[in-house]
Image (tube, rainbow, N blue to C red; front, side):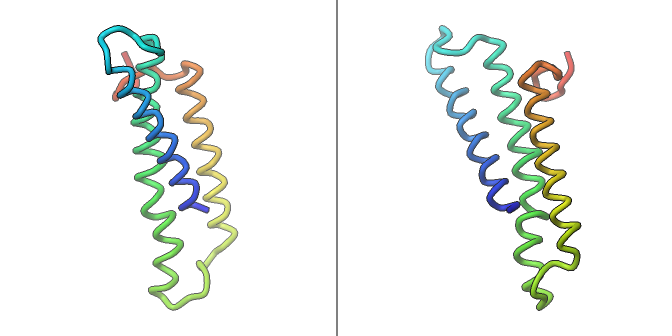
Length: 112
């Protein structure tokens, strides 16, 4: 589940990166306003860092590699593992919605 979700987040962030790079083809705006461009750029960075890179190592690799290394059939606490996945989904939706509706400022620092 983690692997599929983090790869889905990677795909969304990759599509945002393509949209940002497409917008930079010409000096004039092609299909985004400057505010939409800033939101797409910020959303791309936030998704790549917080929804792909950070959760993929302990979530995806920890669920596949660690039980095999220990010789276990499954993770030690499967319900806790599922709860952490659900919390990741809730956090991902909350973070993306906060950026999309303007709850956070754009840019790497999230403040003006």
